[in-house]
Amino acid sequence: MTTAESAPESSRAAEFDLGRLLAERGAERYELHTRYLNHQLPRMLHTIGFDKVYERAEGAYFYDADGNDYLDMLAGFGVMGLGRHHPVIRKALHDVLDASLADLTRFDCQPLPGLLAEKLLAHSPHLDRVFFGNSGTEAVEGALKFARFVTGRPRILYCAHAFHGLTTGSLSVNGESAFRDGFAPLLPDTAVPLGDLDALERELRKGDVAALIVEPIQGKGVLEAPPGYLLAAQELLHRHKALLIADEVQTGLGRTGDFYGYQHEDGVEPDLVCVAKALSGGYVPVGATLGKDWIFKKVYSSMDRVLVHSASFGSNAQAMAAGLAVLSVMENEQIVAGVRAMGERLRSRLAALTDRYEMLADVRGRGLMIGIEFGRPKSLKLRSRWTMLQAARKGLFAQMVVVPLLQRHRILTQVSGDHLEVIKLIPPLIIGEREVDRFVDAFTAVMDDAHDGGLVWDFGKTLVKQAVAHR
Picture (cartoon, helix red, strand yellow):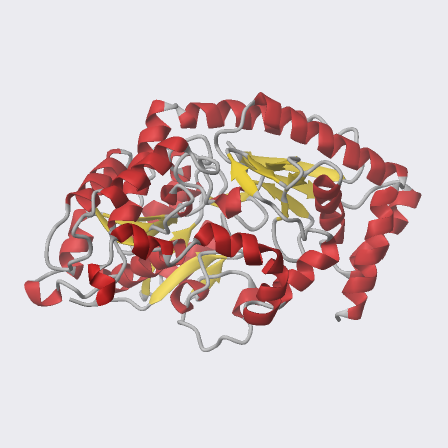
């Protein structure tokens, strides 16, 4: 027995003190990131004034060292569906660690994956089986592989402006060239316009299409599939012996006011569904590919193919416990009903401002996935300023709104995509009237300033200089 093995557990734990490490070196966070990680991230944060230091987080809020609260309307790109550090999920993770389970032996069947699959499928009555991976892009990769294999066809259709992930397979169905540039050759997949059934049918007639993958609401720009499109697309696909894949990585688990985004349209039953993000509870990465029984049985057709698609950390106990706790909270706290109510309150209050502000062009979305789009104003004074920003770089006005929301009102939001004049709101699903009203009041103050020619435009000049300098 080695010395390390014979030492008491308490003394071994004392060898590593996370609290002391953070106390000693936490102030180096931006320097460490610049030196060892993506050096452009701290540079960008410093430039736009997002280089805050958050000490802790709870629910829908961050807190700095002085105790100031910051309202989170971003939810970690949707990962923090139930907010930060939900007590039920924390307890589940403590419990699963304390249980010292024989996890990931690879040659047994632990109960937690089966229990989580059963729970997920209860919300997906037309689906039968689940594969657990570690992320949204991995869930998409699994769906692409399954669709290609069971149809014997090579090509996947996706929608223009789609975002399905950044690994090579999911990047091949990514509708944004900025993400794809420089990473060719990718898979031979084809974009069709969202909502264009004629374009879809033209591609299907070629006979080599395995599936269409679609987000019920696109994250980039918050663009919703037109009413009736998903059902009509499903019928076309099945007529041509191809599959419908619903990417619910961001729209799933209550985000749109239903458990899945596709459930807003009667009769839509995707062959494969991808989920991730909120299923993690914000703690342990997890992704899931849900599918019909015949698809899984064709992929895993014999014992020789038992590991033909697998993941080293898939179905690990911590991720499964987090997922089970998330679904329990969603049911017990009636999260979906709350999303419908708060989403309607937020969207209606923002939509009422479109007549008040020239540059507020549209408010759209479902549930707590809302897009605020800005557009060219009519008045000459505002139009000249708008034109100045657009000439430097499209998307700068939206950034001009996002920055003072954080710096003056302590509210974290995001521009919905590169070169887009759209702010996307995807707050934690647990927000209430206080958070909705705080955001709308702050947004109104920023828009008042933008239309009056106040400090917002001073920051706009800084953005223009940065945009021009980096052309």
